[in-house]
Length: 449
Image (tube, rainbow, N blue to C red):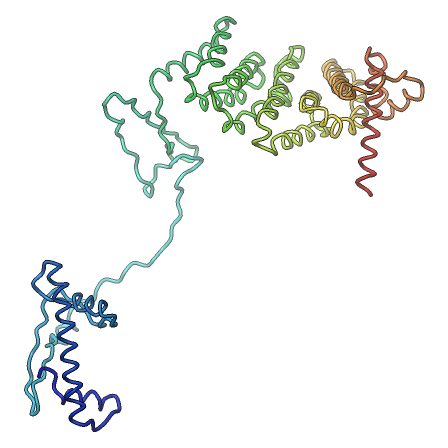
């Protein structure tokens, strides 16, 4: 018998069951021996399927799991375990020989080096989309993309910042040589003094179907041109023409670039000065920028629900700020007018009388430039009232009696009222202003209720 009855008695006494009868211990020893044979046989199957000739602890644990028995919490080792036998009076006991350690040798050995303390340092992974060339960041590779007929990736240009840190863009733009030559040719043609060459370049931008990779470059060209040439009317007009051309090209997807294009248009709309001589026709440039902003709001208003509201808020702030120049006020009035009749009713008309009070003060000054700018602002307000009159199709024009004239002067100021009186369509404008005023009062009463 492999598993003796004395072992069963010893285990029983260790768990508090003394003096087991010999028949019970013999039966239990035989059952344990059967279970051991069963587990070893199952473990041997795992060993054979693993193409091994040595039984391991993992095989035994797998056999126990198959039998739905909790695995043994032992250890696995890569080297064989050597057992030593110790003879006693009753039976032989087997044990694993532990390695003897000399304490004197252990104490005389030098101490291990102290591990470094854990510290945290901060550094810039990227600055405005560009990776600084510092020790903590990975250095860029110098390969050019290899052969095989594929266009090589253009190496990002290194930028030397004011603080001495050299940065490189994180993204390499793959641009074919043909597109690079096309872009250079177009930008040179846009700077040409020949109007035919310039119009040909603009027409190419508006109809060419293979320049979708250059959209971001053209948007950047517009932004840089507007920023660096705020007093050059001709260059700004060309930049606005480029913006109109890329927007009207049906083959280009420019929706992701609207947030970069709109600031340039707003700059040309409400900037203080767009030319060195105030007699130059910078008003047409502002009108064109306002038309483009209105077209953008109409085209992308459903995708960006707050676009029109944010632009209107910006223009209203410029319109109501008395510290802004009259040229900025003109751009704001024209921009709000182009955004639709609703903006005129809600934002322009309620503030016309107060604004005309400030404008009359500017018109009285002995300054030709202020007088000219004030007249354009006054005319812009009159033009803002025309679409308001056109929105009331069922409204009959009033006869402009003295009472109606006084009411109109109370609504828009005496100076603007005189312009309305002298206008051929003054009757409809006066009636529309009165109707819009009633709607505004009804809306306020309804809101108060």
